[in-house]
Length: 439
Image (cartoon, rainbow, N blue to C red):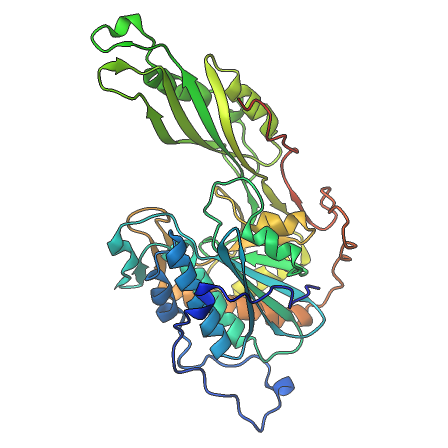
């Protein structure tokens, strides 16, 4: 079961700048002891739509916006008597809150509030029918707002411990320890983890792995008036990308995925309009399948002529058994809340921080609200699905003691988690030497 209280509340600027609502929830009925209140009904000032709108207004693609959002979340929870602790990792905020039982089954609800950059108007939420538009509405401020509300709903129950974790570096492509890794090291673990990445209320039991590669392509310089005397590295880089798109690994498939994907995210080359460029860098976003070998993919990319791999960011695929006890309880909860919708277990093209929990031996899935357009100009989340998502999370926690089954034993402290699926979870890729083929 997770151990709380290990994050230190530092006197950071974002903790001093608290701008939470001035009207907290009304206090529970003093005549009703907490142990007997169970799951509280929704309280009038706790609205997942309004909370999502507030979170969208923070430009959390910048450190300043992240700090302001962290201060708001911290204060919102604290004002509702939720035990919350704050810290920093790599200069960015980390939050963790705990409600419910002191011991017993433990669930981690995890989310991130950082977003990719957007135009100023994308941080001004707008509503059209059931759609709430704004940067991060779908990925994943809407889902995290509903998680915050669900944690408030669950505060009085005493059968399941619930951790709420919030980080601000999920969208980063920097290799190294992330905020979620830091929280895991601090002991915010459990028997099952849910990250609120958008899934349209489906349960993501698999996710592709990530290889973000910086590829330097070499050419030969010449005067712009005589390009035939040179070897244009920018033109060559496009040809290299097309060749990589045709490598054998790109044609493989699995039970939940049609194929891997490769995206050319950035290209930069040349230094003058009248000079044939002798260098060009392309940054590739490769999403590979569980079971594929990332080392072999890097070797195949690096074997292209006149190519050096200069940067690698790697995240393992995610694999959780559809027969996992908590996955089945979550499916039951979603089916109860949305009886006309099939909460099928799906594979996710993107990745998430749930891999940090899997690597610690804790099964976890992606599960979030409905919407579309994440990372795009018209990102939106379904307002109705936010309500359903909140209810499903509460129902899931409520069902756990009713469907009690002794979960697999926790790993001894310091033990390496098994990758054979013995806890119903594993990272789905081969170990990767990130220095392989790095120029």
